[in-house]
Length: 133
Length: 121
Image 1 (cartoon, rainbow over the protein chains, first blue to last red):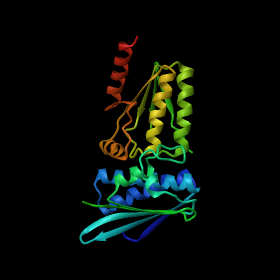
Image 2: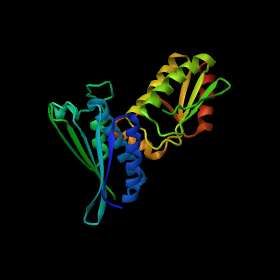
Image 3: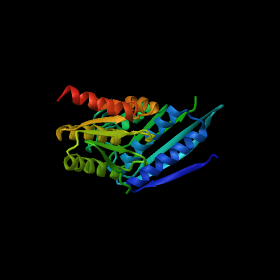
């Protein structure tokens, strides 16, 4: 099945729901077990970021195609305060919360494509893609 | 919120995580374990993550926190049963869990605790 699926995040139970849905789509797309684990972990980090830093947001999960390859794309959006310095936010260990500062930088390493769109007062949108090999 | 049960076997506490961990469950487990270590005078804690499909930075930090907290309460912690895909992902994420002892399975975890104890009487 293709098409888009969406999870609205308002509590930590929704982060679990995101993980479960991303897992099922990753299997459907044909990602290997290791790649499934990586994209589910990245989804968990990004969904929690939206919850912790913006009080919530939403996650859209899409099946994408590039020639004969299939992949899974995640778009995580929130209307929070936004990130003033994107480069700094992608540095390992940098955090404004009390986390480890690995959410964004670590997620970037777990996926094939990573795009971060944010600015003060503009909310944050992170788009990531993992392709089946 | 689901709670993870803490089982007692001699002076070892065993926690087998069988649910999809919500952040609140993780925090509750930390507190439950600290209480249980003190209440039972436990010397060892084994956390079985055989059924855990992903460990993200929050869950990883919980494992490190539990190990540190138990050490302060005079108990040693061993994490057992990590899946290969989880190990690969954790390292790539940037979490190496330096302070956390691991063993491949429950049996080896128990043996490791025995070994630690005989080395430090």
